[in-house]
Length: 395
Image (cartoon, rainbow, N blue to C red; front, side, top):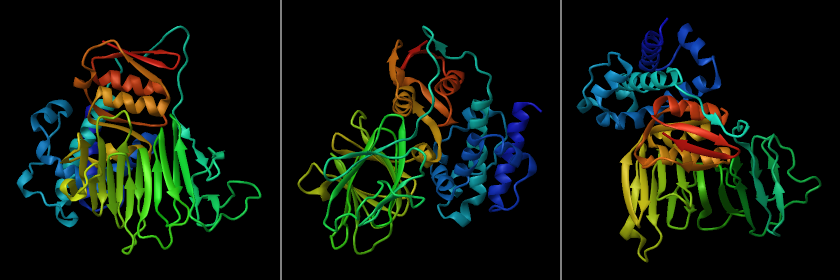
């Protein structure tokens, strides 16, 4: 079976599965899903309700002629004016979006690699990042967290891993007094944390999260973030949850959202998956002058103390949490910044205007660096050289 025919058939099967609201997965589609972790992660992300609803919000922006030329397949003739935001009413259109999304991805990922990254001076390949983080205790002591555990749980009087094992052997219960803790991930590291109130946080590479051990009796639950994190906030109508950064505050009662706030990024991006959030620039005396409310599927970018809000494919913002590197119309420079952080490398450009090169595609974050670069080479007129922990981008 040709790649194009397989793309058609799998896309139709995904569309039928979504239209039916789930059920039995066809054997051919099931076999494709079970081929590797990348296929499974892509499928699971694609059929999430929030992913489908956010994709629908981008339906108007799809260039149908371009999509036709790229994946060479027939799309459902559904007009954008008929799209509805409510899940029960949009399922058929979601199937069409699934076909478009899957078709473009399969076409991109299935193309033969024209070239592979060049290893310079005997340099070897670089492994993907992994679970890695440090915990700074109130007395300044640094604890290297286990890379074999699935996450850290911070109680109001105890620290332990998700499996119940202790972080520190023979550790005494934490003081009931309010204390400040900081969890930090290095470049090439990620970690999941459960806070005292039950809120779950996934930290991406090169990120810091600061929080208090005793959040009882306070007016608001507040944490501070530098870097990137995905939050699933425990609902509490009496106490808002606030994520503070240098330039903005995000306030919620209980919801799912992602914040990307690296110091070397040109803007802070807040993406909402579920619920609602209030985002405020904290550089003005009257924060109400520059605050917005986000709806699911929207992303707010704060730059020069001004917000720009747009509909996005949420998978592009949160795919990293589920083990994917996702490039949905992202420019090469931005994509390489994510690769720098996850693989712990430095990128050097020997070409002009890298921000003008746009990428489309997905790949597992478990892939070696050379595999990721080869995928990018297959869809862009560029070439990579790997020299120790430096990646050189050339034409």
